[in-house]
Length: 287
Image (cartoon, rainbow, N blue to C red):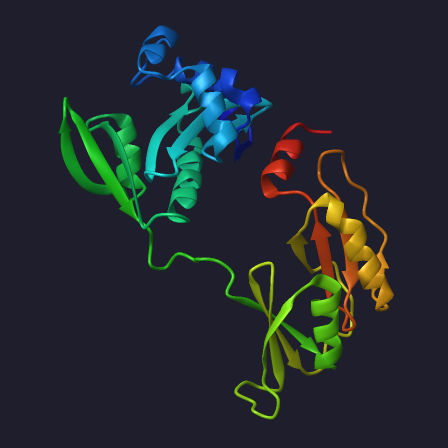
């Protein structure tokens, strides 16, 4: 297949990707360095492997089962310090995808991200096109660029609302069954459309509002992360209060385990042991 038509996937890098990342780094057109030159500035396979093990700081772009690009950040200093794509795969949006993935990681922690690059390089043009600016000359033809977190950027989930027939029954389901904490009960004071209760579960604000719940069950669901060791205990508590637990769906090895169950108003929940990074890594390996 023509490389320009091969779909690509951006996923978190693992230690197993380090060799491929160095193959990309030493094959680029701009700012090309040999393994010896990289080692002299402290960039070695061992150093990169340690960085990947210590923090989610690197991503690779994979096309046709091959790593064709990578990017890295320093999460503590808000620096995007590496973004490289193999020459035969340039112009496909891979660099853009890697850079935007890095931006998302940095903007979760910092209002401003920065990088340094050659001012007249092709890379600098890409960064300018993606909204990097505020350029400062740092010498030897290099510039420092910055990008601010957009005020229109979605910051995260505010809250999730469930429409239920019985608020007390939902409170028992959430608090006893899942370990949520009730933080508000409207009682007779209806500031919203109807009586409601607020809960906090796993750091997420959940709202239960009295009303007519869904009449049909679908696969649309809310999933919370739990440890594998905790899964049997949750299942036992949920079954003890009459919750309907669904049979597990077929899964590939390495995807994580799940417990699916309905509340008393046709809302489907899931407790899952895996992470997004683990899921992407597993799917990238294929069947």
